[in-house]
Image (cartoon, rainbow, N blue to C red):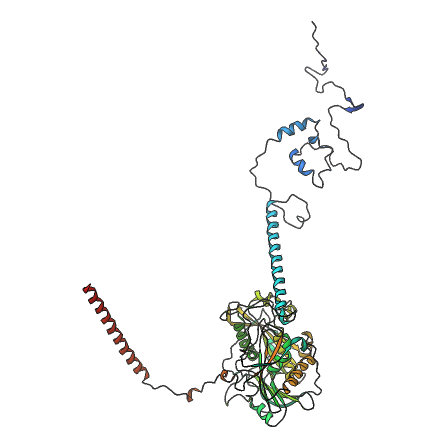
Length: 592
């Protein structure tokens, strides 16, 4: 029986088998010769070859990496994926094992290059994307709600319009209570006002100028947010809001038959800028003979300055809230009055005119104001006289120039979206554009009043609260001057349209019978209504001014002693009654 030893390789260099075992270098397979023990993978010439061999790659990661953009580049010579290779079996065996590493994951390299590198997203990046998607969803939901409310407001207001674009709030109510006995005569939509145009044929004529003016302090032109000024309070100076028929000068001019229509600049500006108004207001019209008087009620809405009237964002409804419409109107009115007196040179040098202030008593300190009684010719039979106000005077090229002083107030940057302390120096136009959007009616009325008064300049002050929750203390951040004609063109205020509205209202009222009427702006729709009211309407709403202290009846001096005696007697009687009640309770308890 024989034993086949087999092929024993010979090692000529020493003992033991040789380092390279003897074997054929080429192996024939499928009729072709291939190198022995070397895996082979076919590839095309268009494929890019990155590495000749990569023995250090993780076979578990290669499956995921092969799906990426650069994963197929080295797949040709990736022997870990070759089933004929011995590494494939080892990779299959090692796939059941996992390496536990206690090291924290590497932090992402945030920087300019991180955005452009295609790396596997880390967990914290995924969390940020989730939060970003949530924020985008919230914005989209808010946008849909805003559009829904806008469509609903437009449908409620009877169609799109300037006044109907504001958010519909439940606290919108008429400025005057419409009584059942009132008769509505006419209803005028604002769309008809925009088509009116009238050019006054002749320039206005000054019939009389009353009061005294102080000079403007040019140092306030250098005020900025970094060099702000504290707003002072002028409690000793009196401001007057006298209606047309209570003006003694207008009564004298009416008696002399100087005109047929009489009004004030505040009333005329409300009519001229009516299409821009949103809140309700009213004007009392009296037809006496062939004359027409435009009046306002005592404590009327025209005496206060509106805040954020044309804004999209609603104000708080509670009247006691410091940011409610009524509270902000009172605050803006006081700010405007104090600002108009603080920016003056208070050295006693004043410019006097024909007559003193017609509303001030002798020795009374009044604000710097001049009343210009001006007359316009509307047609051959109709002349209009209006009392117009100017607040200060300045010298320009050696000539005295009239100017008006008004103040815009910032109460909370969250409502406007623009912080004045940061934007006034760098983006002044953006601040003014925001105010034109939120307070279009107020700025238009200020411009109309300045044009009626014949002023050449208008100074606008930017006043802000010291703190958003403090509505008593304010600071002046900036004072900017504007030429009236340029500013009127900037806010798209057409003087021909302004006088067209006044002329149409005057012609309409001249056709009415003698009596009293009221013109009311609808609180929800862009229109005005004319009501016929009784002759004694609104008379009970007038507030009587208190008498001076020296004319008031003084209480007797012994009143305090008498009151104290009465209080002692009443307290003794109360104690006696309480003791009697306790005695009765004790008696009842003993009986039980």
